[in-house]
Image (cartoon, rainbow, N blue to C red):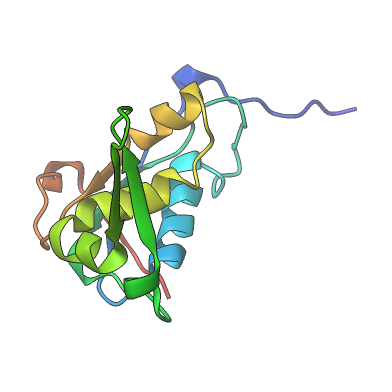
Length: 144
């Protein structure tokens, strides 16, 4: 009987990928990025080890939202104080905080807990088409 392969933390080899968010639906972008951050695209995937790759998302302000989400979708924040609830529509988030909108979508699809926070640290989102990670020689990732 063969044993299942379990990857060790020291054996993980990480690649770098660039995703251009121009005219890509936010949900498709988030699910694909979370899949790669988690490492599920690798044959050596191990659920309890952070074996995912690094993701760079560029042009976050050009991401697409389908339907009437720009007006209907609401992002909530609470300060912890009484009356400290702040609400923003997706339209406001896209105009003023596009990086946070993409990061929140991807973070919501990662596991909760220590491992998920570790995976989230490998995500880099930028508004323009420029990013400071050219030395890592990232590969272009196409999302349909």
